[in-house]
Amino acid sequence: MSALDAKDCAILARLQANARITFAELGRQVGLSTPAVIERVRQLEEAEVILGYHAQVDPLAVGLPVAALVRITIAGNHLQQFNALVRTIPEVLECHRVTGSESYIVHVAVRDTQHLEEVIDSMMPYVSTNTSLVLASPVAWNSVTPAQDLPRRKAKARAAKKS
Image 1 (cartoon, rainbow, N blue to C red):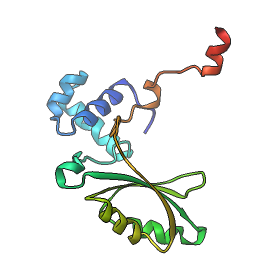
Image 2 (cartoon, rainbow, N blue to C red):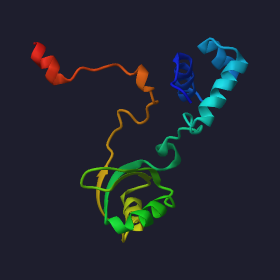
Image 3 (tube, one colour):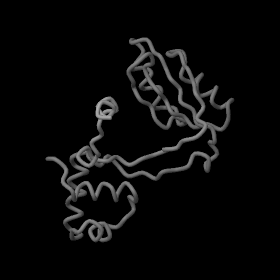
């Protein structure tokens, strides 16, 4: 797919805000006919710009009030085994391979600290862990803004030189 245009960006913003919006309403909001919106959404899906549609569920509402970030360090020869293992743990909300001293950061939701201990233990013996409990989430989820719509920010160093 070629670069996103303003209509594509508008479609993406509205679908991220409400994936259940009808194509007719989406067309009205972005200034396109219903068939044109359907075609654009189909193209965005085929180009894998849109990866899927999901319900955002509050873990607290389903009995998982404790969130934690588990930083995991793994020896290089166990990376594939850990990748397979972590996909089988239902408490894992996200898992990211990262740079730095850790190999992964895993976001989990659990009932309590005993449950957290069980989840961490289920990731063994491949790993060493360092865990932080989440106290608050000022940004629990945010929509993705296409690069061309992001503001340009000046580096603080350049701004300080001008002062």
